[in-house]
Length: 478
Image (tube, rainbow, N blue to C red; front, side):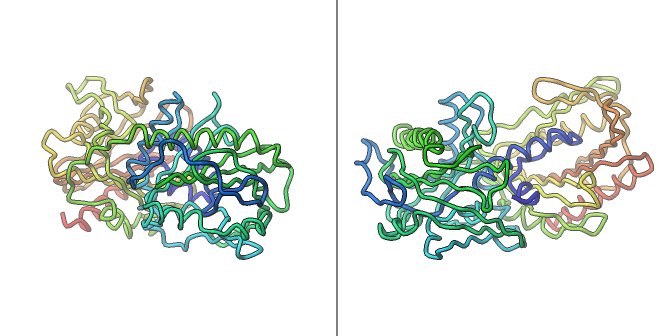
């Protein structure tokens, strides 16, 4: 996947000024999304040997019969991860979908040779996210102590009425399955094409119908990983799973991965049937994720570039906000600023980036609309008080802290109910000046951050962020 694709799937606000954590978040999500790019098939049916169709085994005692929402599918993935006591889980479906809706570039394309084998072809995750006729969730589940491309199963769950999901994900004939035992795949994204060889394999028991495959780059280069994949149908659920395999030369090499994925697929199905997810409705909000994406699109940075790939989501009631940090206790009080975002349940939160002349010149812009039920004191105001008033600040990272050094507060012009502007360095020798500006008007908050390398650049950097925040408020009619 391209770097831009990774950004579209990335986590919400990285730690301001924490380049390492931001990079780690993108790497983790890249692993998950890469699995979808390489081996996430859109259609298929049961096979018991490479290319040979069969009717499959009898369905298990419990088969999903309801259509699950995106949020319920996310809850199923998270429950299975919790049951396994692993760190995996679901990505935010709302953010994935809104990111695709905001993209200006065409979706990636998939072509196969023979052409009618396209029903078995791995499909871009972007196409899955964009398809609102079928509910979906994506995520990753590690199957070993050390997570990585060969030990983390990436998965996509889709849900629709039984006939609809079967038509969408398992629509092919036995004859076509036999003829497509092996085929070539060309995947094109942003004008760049990669070619792969795909072979259908025998699928281990799971669900009502299933098919399996393995995929390698073509031509295969030294060090290239292959991938094994499995798609399973059970009632109103379709589960697609993939796992990278370092040496994938035969069906025997893929068998351990397929067996692991079949076990996980059945766990997901059983979880859906035996422990149906219950997701509380979020408090009402006057702005939807699409509203925030529209608000971010067209915002211009100091260099003339606009926000790239904005995305947004709603913070659910099951995801409480994080402590924003200790409020100011006087001019000399030490305060802790949490690098993790703190939003009220029901908040709609959007994020985008504006790329500068290099990677370190990227501006991150976060917009949050509080729910209509929000009352003061607002979490943002506590954050602003910490950043505006405390003489010394420690950066809290969820269990550890580190001090900010050379703390400064540039003067910026923002008409708002509450605001802050702060510049700090870390004692890491990097020389980076981390510039952060934020403001609230009513129930809408906007925060922006950028890195500068000299004191002479700090004020102009803060002024540029303040101007962007002003643009957002103006577009919101505030």
